[in-house]
Image: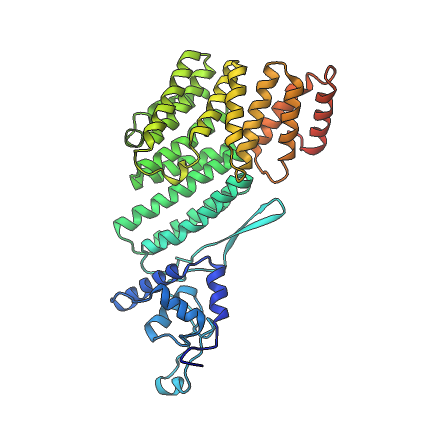
Length: 435
């Protein structure tokens, strides 16, 4: 040590913190919660204290903090890279405690691996099964894997992700069976379970596994009823509309959206109301009701305009913006056979699509290609469809794959008359699996 500062950096602890995706503040919160559980007194760990641990300025934490760190990671202080002072063992007996049955491990080695293209996502879960009591910090820790799953879905598609999300729910349910929780924490865990199940339903929809989606969403709706979370219910209803429309039951999808418009969440949050108006517009389009569809699209835009002064947008609804409404309008116009309007609104949505969301771009380009075919502008349709195939490599979406095949079937009609259409369908058959 020089000038009171250790030259030793705790690389072992730093590696564990990085592996589990913890921030310094997050680790401090977990340590404080364990200290309060063990001693009945609030902990005093801070972000700066964690920095001192990592930098080696604290080589051997005080007993209460050391015990809390052992319980957080489920290993002894020595295994965490700490160095005991000389003679500590002789003064106070065994100072290195091997944690065989910790009260609460922040992490365990069970992981869910989702193959996505050439890579895999590792989701590490906290082990709550040996805890005696759960707190809000456990809820927040378990929310972190959900963010990873949603990010991967946004970028690559939901295929393979639903079982992982459902696995986290089982993990939560097992912990709630064994551990004491306050009413507030229990509701928060049910809300979190509903968020995982709602996303599992969406992942299954995107994988084109509609029976699995129905099971996840039914489970999610039961959980949301217990949590009494109106915004969560709106998320699940959105998934149910998606499932119904993907199954071709547009009447059911419209009925859910119309009922949702009268919900508490819709009345309180204009952005949620905009979502339902967009779905109702698609329902009218499938019924051939052009004027009613356009009226609902106008109401969706009006509601979105009011959302700027409304409550914060829930994380599951961040996708809904004016560009998304343009995409919904394009689809409604396409269904109605209003191909010129579908072309214009789809082009607007494509131009505004961020590069980080290739699935959205592909979906909107598929709509545009269909609009061109509707106007018998086959060369333009081929140009767009070729770009669509260029973007398929990293996408894993059974839902989009079905739309690819629909486009192929429509393009194949022109094979004998338009050489470009024949070339595209040949490329399609060599690149994409059969439906």
